[in-house]
Length: 365
Image (tube, rainbow, N blue to C red; front, side, top):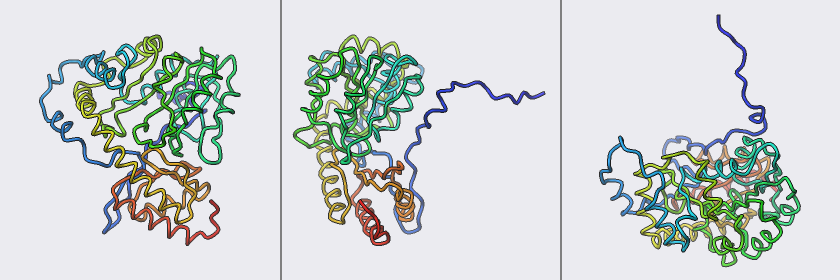
C-alpha cells in the first residue's frame, strides 16, 4: 500500500520562491540567438586560461586542495591582504549561503535592498530569519538611511550589493563609510561585489579599504563575471580572520575542483588583462545605456555588465517581444535586466526597444 501523505518539509520554504536561472533564447529562423539573461561575460576566455584547461591534471581520483592554498596566497598578493583573510568557495552563491548560516537563524533578522539579487531572500528565508527588504530609491540606488534605520538588536546580517544587481548603481565610498559607522559592530555587513571590476564611477565604494576599520565587513566576490569563469564556479571572500574561521565551518569541503582552482589562479596571474577586458565591456555598456536613454528610456546608472529597464507591468510584454527576436532577457517583474553581449545582440535589442516604445506610446518611464 502506497502512503500518499506528503513529506514534512520546513514551513520556511513556503515564504520565498526558488532561484530561477535566466532563460535560454528562443530559436528563430534566420536569427542568431543571444542569451542576455545571465550576466555572462561574452568575450572569449583568456588564452592563458584555455591553455591551462588543456593541460592534464592529477586525475579525478584525487581530492582538490581543500584549503586552496595557492589561490588564496595569490588573492592575498593581488589585493594586499593576508591569505588568512580570504576563503575560496564554489561560486559566490555558496558564500551567500555560508555567510547566512553563520549569522542567522529564527531568532535573528536580516536586511537587504530590493530589488536586488534574488538569492538574498532565499538564503535568509531558509535560515528562518525575519527578513526586511528595504525598497530601493526611485533611481535604483540603495536607500542606506532606511536600511540603517531598519537595524535592531536582533539584526544579524545586512546584505549590500554594489553594483546592484539588477538595477546597476554603485554605492559611493562616502555612502558606505557613513553606513558602516551607523551599523553596530556585531552586525555582519556582507558587501556583494560580484560586478566590481566593471564599475567606472570614480566615487564607487572601495570596500577593501574599510576592512581594517570594520571587522564586521565581508566582501563577496566571484570569478564568474569579469574573469569569465562562470562554468568553473569559483567565488571568494575577503574578511576579518574571525569571520573567515566561521565561514570555513559552513562551506562544502573540497567544493572547488582542482581544474577550477588552476583556471582561477591563471586568471589572477593575468589580472591586468581581466581589468582591461572589464573596461572594454563597461565601454560597451555605457554606449548601450546612452543609446537607450536617447530613445527615451529611463536607464539607471549602469555600473555592472548589464542595464535595467524599469518596465513594471510591461515586463512580460517586453520579454515576449525580445524572445521573438531570439533574445533572452531577464524578466524580474518590476523590470527587465539586459546583459551586455556581442554588438550584434545589443543592436538587435535597440531595434526591439525602439519598436516597443512605438507600440506602447502610453509607456511611462
